[in-house]
Amino acid sequence: MDDRPHHKFWPQRLPRSITVPATSLWHNLKTSAERYPDKTAIVFFGSEISFREFAAQVERLAGALHALGVKRGDRVILDMQNCPQLVIAHFAILRANAVVVPVNPMNRAEELKHYIVDPDARVAITTGDLAPELARASNALDPANRLAHIIVSQFTDAFDAQVTGDEAPPPAWRDWLLARHPLPELQGGAAMTWTDAMNAGHPPPEHVAGANDMALLPYTSGTTGLPKGCIHNHSSLMHNTFAGQLWGQGSCETVSLAVVPMFHITGIVSLMHTTVLMGGTLVIMPRWDRDVAGRLISRRKVTNWTNIPTMVIDLMGSPSFANYDLSSLAYIGGGGAAMPQAVAQRLLEQFGLKYQEGYGLTETAAPTHTNPLDNPKQQCLGVPFISTDARVVDPQTLQEMPVGETGEIIVHGPEVFQGYWKQPAATAAAFVEFDGRRFFRTGDMGRMDEDGYFFMTDRLKRMINASGFKVWPAEVELLMFRHPAIQEACVIGIQDAYRGESVKAVVVLRPTHQDTTAQQIIDWCRENMAAYKVPRVVQFADALPKSGSGKVMWRRLQEIEKEASV
Image 1: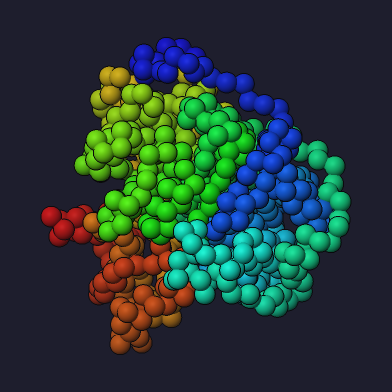
Image 2: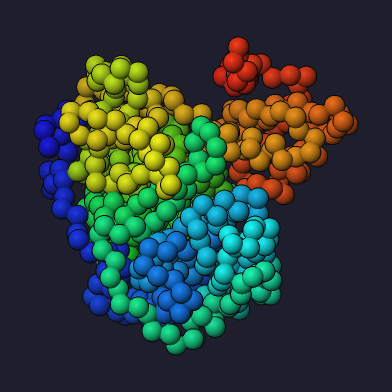
């Protein structure tokens, strides 16, 4: 790779590019289990799973999937909060030569229908609290599109419900985590317990998947329409898994706090796969709680904490913060939103920790940019990652922009996805030929400084970033149009002191439903979409501003909102 400005800050110990292994991701767990059979792989509310047991459970579940008819290349839905079963199921799907379709567990039935139909999924793995919603989605579909099998786990399949002390679930979580849910009715199919699947004794198939087989089909939304599946082969995930270990100086002694969701690309690649590759330990939290995090970092001597900045801000605001021992932390970083400069400075001065910001997309298997450990810049995307070339170009002419000037960030590297599932036109539009190579158009606007570090300035894509969760207005609008009172809706972002941004909907009511209240619409949204997508504010209007061609002028509404907030 030609010299670029950032190479003068490149860590001397690291290669600029690496050779991607030709093996599947399952091979990484198999190797770690052979190397460190008795070492703790997973911690969950005081319960520990060794690498030997982890791999054995994966083999048993892969056998159950094979017996249910899952074949090479089949897509299997994985709909769970962070828990050991998510990690085991993820690797079991790969072990069975199949493809993981990770689904946000906050999604409701209306949203879940798309994740069943679009990838042609026939099998899903979930937890008892989420299974009814998944079954409701499947049962509402045409018989030809329904799920044939659901495997349902309970959280207490993975930990002792009687656990006490520092590692016990907080009181607010106990009813949720300790509940034992009945199996849902799956029309035209069958539900099976996790325990029955594990104890069925079916042998796994021969493992034949390799680097060029599809491994993951995560979904991302965009400016129009329903979410699109991003095709990732084993090789694209493998690159960022190995590169992540090298960049972060990880080893088998790494202890990772797994609190960012492992249905999301960052949690999947930078946390789960990277920790498993190096034989480290995953200390799993099913959702965020600042004091649970503080106690686990202290008790389990967590060395690596990948997060979103709001988590750090929340932890540091805890009345108990002074009681927590963060001295074991060697790495703290993340992305999804900028870390406020004052908080980054406090981490540096109080703990000697340099917050490592990075940047990546679902389409790029997480990082395409990250900050060098020794030379990070605050509120900066970082420099192009190992094996990666990134440029800033004029989005219209595709000419490279001079240093310091804003343009669209484009990326070339082995971590870039293969394309959008069943969407050849969208795939073609997502790539551009530049310097004789195929670059992915991120849709994000940025600039590069004289040192080769990249900074985000704006987005070409219409997107709201709420506490690191990406909210795509077009998707929220499509769901809102199903409300009987809504004639038109336009979704925009509003400033939020804690979340960064929140969702606002400007709504035109049907003449027959003029008595509908904003709260009624918000309550309906809570029933029909993931919580982070739900509008915090609903504003009624007699009409939405439209262009001459009849398109809603969402930018005008966004500008009015920005002017009002100044």
